[in-house]
Amino acid sequence: MDGRADRGGAGMIFGRVREIWRYPVSSMGGEKLESAIFAPGGVEGDRLWGVEVDGAIAAPEKRKVCRPLPDMPARLLGNIPEVLLPSGGWARADAPEASAAIAERLAARVRLAPHESLAPRYERLDVHVLTTAALASLAGWISDPAQADPRRYRPNLVIETAGGVEGLPEQDLVGRRLEIGEVRVEIVEPCARCALPALGVDGLAFLPELIHAVSKRAGGNFGALARIEGSGRIATGDEVRLG
Image 1 (cartoon, rainbow, N blue to C red):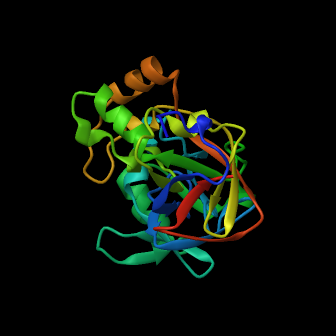
Image 2 (cartoon, rainbow, N blue to C red):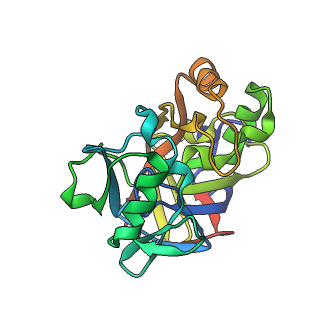
Image 3 (tube, rainbow, N blue to C red):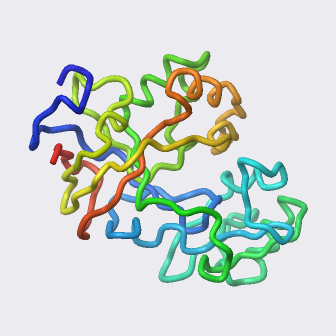
């Protein structure tokens, strides 16, 4: 490939799956998986619950009180998400201590609830796809390349792109399909970025420079949103081919 993925033919190797992520509680930290079931609607167990802060749906990119949420991990065991407590233990999202721990960190009133009982914050496509080529481009746009970390962008799939693929290839693939493991994924549109990636998470710095760089160099888009066709399991290391 010569740097633009849309010039590649069907069946050509685009890369391999490097990371798989899901976010059992919207706006909170996610969990990195070795494999997961992907089906229409998204990754199995993704964004099952949400957070209400002072009577409104959490929006870390808009409301300062919500900014710590992406740095607070959640995971899924069974059908109910769990939240990491300051003690290092985990509490089910439906247990009072889970909401209490978040409320103490935010200094606000907090309610955790399944998504269907909360007003939807936004409509979203099934999965967010990000490539290492895009991350390498971002690293070249900012003063500290180490801050170009996928955790800021909350992807479901991070694809290690094949040699020769450069720029923002997932955006070049809009309208095309990827074959990943047992699953076929249609790239639908670039992912418009809000201020959320600038927030510090997992030891990364608060870095507004990221927002300016993506706005100037990529029209405010980074990564791509995709629709899943059929269902199946995707695992790290799976080959990714252009459909």
